[in-house]
Image 1: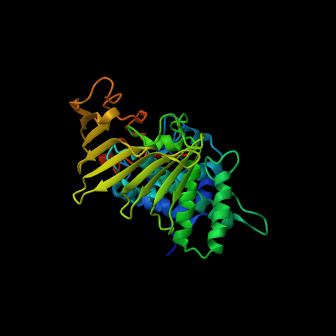
Image 2 (image 1 turned 90 degrees about the horizontal axis):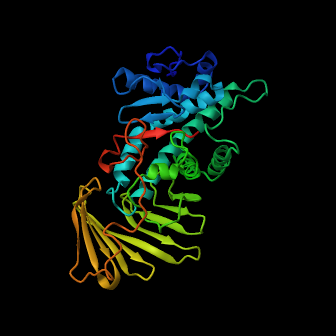
Image 3 (image 1 turned 135 degrees about the vertical axis):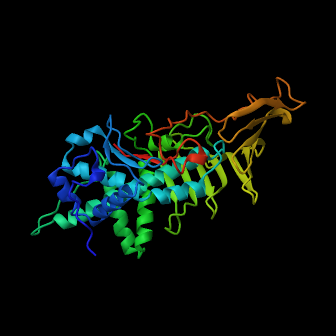
Length: 394
C-alpha cells in the first residue's frame, strides 16, 4: 500500500509553513513520509500537538507534552537543511517509546555514582537514533532525485558541520556492515551507537555551552575523579548489534578513562576510573536485591572503601562516607536527592579522622533546567520516561 503523500497543508503543521520545494523533497523519502503520517495520526488522536516555531534557534521534540518545535532560524533556512532538521526531530518522535523503555531499563537512582554517565548514555543513544533517521531520509532523497546519470539532492546530516564526520561514519559503517553480512537491524544499531558516540562531543542548539554528554548527564554526582572535565572520546559497546549496551567508556584529555558496565537487565554491575597507564584509581561494585533495592560500594586505588550508597526500590538513599582511620559519616536522602535531616558522624570521628564532608567527594554538577526544553535524560529519574525532550544538533 502506497504511503499517502504529504501536501504541506495538514493541520499538524501548526505555525510551521513548509515551502513547495521542501514538500517535494519530503515526498522523495518514504521514511519521512511515513514519519509525518505517523505524526498526523498521533495528532488526530490527541496524542501529539501541532508543530510550532520556537522563540529562539533551539529545535527539539518534547516528549511529555508531545510536540516538535523548530527553531526560528528554520523560517529562512535553505531547503536541504530544513528537511534534514525536520527528519532529525521526527527521528526522536518515532523512537520516543523505545527511548522511554531504555530509560526505564537502564535507569538509576538519582544519586547513584553512575547516574550522570548512564543518563548521558541514554540521551546520546536517542540522539544517535535521530541522526540515523536523518541519514536514512538523506539517502532515500539522494536515490530518488538522481536523473540521467546526474547525482541527486544530498540534504546532509543536520548539524554535521564543517567536516561532515557523521556523514563519513554512516557511509563507511554501512558499507562495512553490509560486507560483513550484518542484518538490517544490526546495521542500524551499529550506526546508531557510533553516531551517539560521535555526537557526545557536539553542542546542542539549546545550550551550546555544554557538550551533548554533559547536557544529558544532568545528575548530582558522577563516578569520575575531580577535574577530569568533559570526555574527548566516548565508546558504546553493543556486541550483538541488538541495541543492548553492555558498557560505555569515556576518554579524557589527561588520558584517564571511565567505564560503566551493564548486565543483561540493563542495570549497572560495576564502574571504574583508570589512569593513562591502566591503573584503577577508583571503582564501584553493585549488589542488587530482588525487590529493586541495591547498594553501590566505591573503593579507591588501594581497594579501601570510601563510600557505600544503599538505595531502596524507590531511589531513596543512605550514604555512608568513610574517612581516615575508618571514621564514618552517614547521610540520608529522599528519592529526589534532597538530604533528609542532618548527617551523623560515627562516635570515633574527630576533626582529624572525619571525611571532608558528609556529601560525596565527586564534583557537583548543576542540574539542567526542567520544563519545556529539558533534555532527554530528565531531572528526576521517576519522571524521565515521561519528560523525554530532545534538542537537535546545531
